Amino acid sequence: MLCGPPRRPDPPHAPPAEPAPTFRSPEPMPSSTDPYDLLGVPSTATAADVKQAFRRLAARWHPDRNPAPEAATRFREAQEAYELLIDPDRRRAHDEKRRRHLLEDPQPVARGLFEAYLAEIGS
Image 1: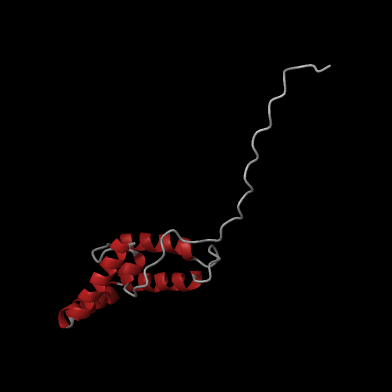
Image 2: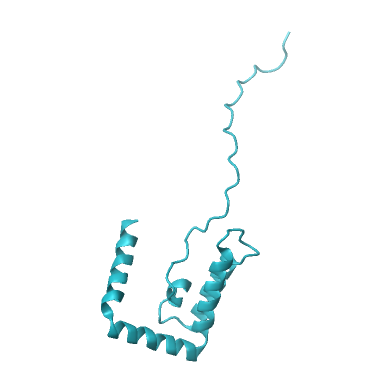
């Protein structure tokens, strides 16, 4: 004879656990070589903003913390962008070059901006 309350039915089986995903950055770095785009800061960013953006990217892309194959390259790109923008003389020269390039030959720059805009709204 059975003692105790009636037995409850077994709960449905849980689906098998999925394998751990490999590291993928939620927001890939832009393919641009412009240091402002690489760090994700506007051209009016202060040195503190540049430093904060670099630290954020360095934490994400440092090869010791990120096993992705492109991590070392992305980290170097961010480091070079930081070094250029944190030095006032190099940053001033870069900004002048950007302005001069836009004024001398605006069509390729405008085309690139428009294509980037279309790619962004298309995705």
